[in-house]
Length: 185
Image (tube, rainbow, N blue to C red; front, side, top):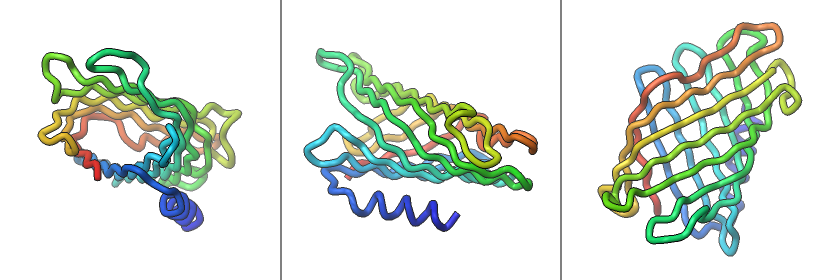
């Protein structure tokens, strides 16, 4: 686990950045902290995060995504496509492993309500993209946010994060509603 945190820190600190984001979301059982850096002179974004569930363990990820506009107009759809290296560590024995989740996100700001944003993200690692005891990894998020400042958003969302394992029971790291905030700096 220390290796994963060291890899996450090195990747985020070594990248030259043009913009940074910090995201924190939680519910009664789970907490997710994420940090994103848009790489300068590139459409690539590097992100890292930690999801902790008080009953089932944690998941750490480092991701890279190509980001940009998926449509044109006054309020274009922002999109990202890429992957995440994930390490999951459940509370039971044989509930740990690595995966390469592929997926992305879509984000749209409503035209008539230009401070309201709809966002969805999905990352999936099938058995062929996992190592150790991890057999499958899923991470799905949907949220509705309100930008009370252009650089700060509060949101309400739903998240489903699950790890399936070869010999151990599945671990549900998050399944439900959450609140959060996102700050750009």
